[in-house]
Image 1 (cartoon, one colour):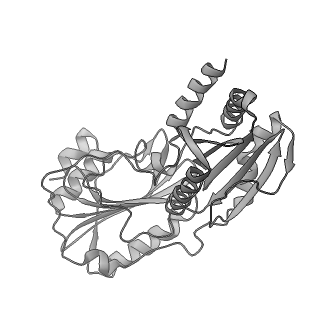
Image 2 (spheres, rainbow, N blue to C red):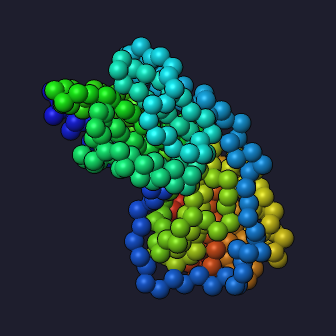
Image 3 (tube, rainbow, N blue to C red):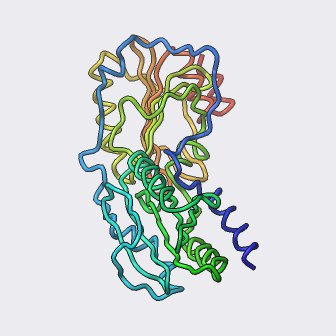
Length: 324
């Protein structure tokens, strides 16, 4: 039974995309980027962030939702942390389940959560030996620490299961059962920049150069050669960012031009606003509402590269023929 549970757990962890480093969308490298919008375009736009990056969401409420399945199965008693804890969380909850200790810590974005998780793992490595993915065997307890995304926040979860030498296998069994109760598979910012994207981000250079206050962002090129800046926000924050982005582009001597009819929906969400501009190069922006999240995208560069990217994402055979 223990082996079966462990295999199921590993599969779910992989599917959920646990946080060992900032989430990344799939990428490949392109050999010859072709974007040619004037140098300094992003600097002229400047940094854009929502006025309230949390968009009114309460991390304590999200923690309560995250541990709800655990509370439905076990009796939970509040407890002071009896283990190393990550730093810099917005909110946290530590409790005891039977003889095990659990802590859940909420973070505003992928970057802060990944940094805190990395530091926590270094602490755990000083008190125990690594026994597998995200597990450490200490002198009298088994530890685990992993990351997850749920309901607008990134979480770091740490577990401690005390044991004696005769019952070390039982400690691992208990640990796996508790972890299994806190594994969520569903939409995430990483999927919004990967599975739910209609283009790839190639030659990726890290987080966005203009978007801030986001859950996760990226900067790079599309396969067609347009430059791309894209960020995922909590639902409701993306609209404010999009409006600011549109206003700043209009202030840079770019004129809005019409696009042919394009698709606006996919199984995960829909485009609620989009615009195309021409000036010293071409610019396309869009606001996409996904499951519980907004995504704001900026494409810029050669007219042909930008239009080709837009058509590849949302065009049909008929509309592709209209854009040349």
